[in-house]
Length: 323
Ligand code: G1P
Image (cartoon, rainbow, N blue to C red):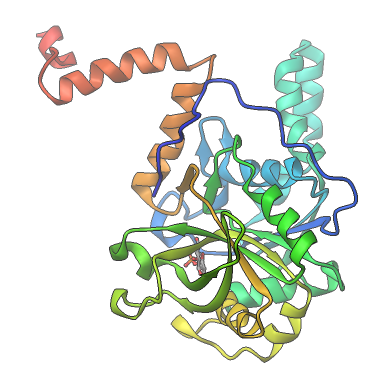
């Protein structure tokens, strides 16, 4: 789902200033899912590698982490995810060929993914759920707070959500989740949070969490979207968390444990987000930046206007013109 962004404009804003001395340096990106919603496109290509204009979706997520000052990214992958590893590695032959041609623009585009952060990969082995994927990161993370970014959620690069979450973690400690109000008919797709005010605008205390509740059981309309800043305590809880919804070890269930101890806060996000796991929203996630990009936008928007006119019958269609 998505909401219009009040400050949508063509050129991306500079990355938010990163506060010095933040406790969080590392990000974890779970990317072991099978991507069944996008078959057959995802039969041999990881869903995280589906293009959004001319970059794979996961690159936007790594760019978001890097823009918030996280310089160490661990991808938790599964089988058939070699393309992700290759994308964030050097491509020696391609780089040589572009360098020989003097094509510095494309050379930079090829080199950029590997320069974003120090990128590590680990395999989940068995698809035991998001909570288990996070637990796989334990050794790499150690005893430090860390961020988790889910690849299906694309947050507009002009937003400062992750940076705000890191600031809240620094001030209030514990864990921080990103929340978004959704229509009651959509809450069953998300983790749902019971909340109470903190007195600070946009920041709530999370008092309970339930994974993908039926609408009548949902404690609120606040959905957990795929950004988390987690206290390392979560590992101890995850170790003891039994399989929950769908027979999987749920991160939501571990956070519910921590929330009952009063150590989980939520940031209420009202900005622009796309769920690329949803086909219609994936298309919106592609069309919006295509319209806004200076190199593509003018021509593409002109075409789009004409096409919409065709669809609602106010302009002659391609076939009408050709006939
Ligand atoms: C996961 C989480 C869920 C969260 C959602 C956000 O679900 O389990 O709590 O609300 O991501 O995108 P998934 O979409 O992987 O089923």
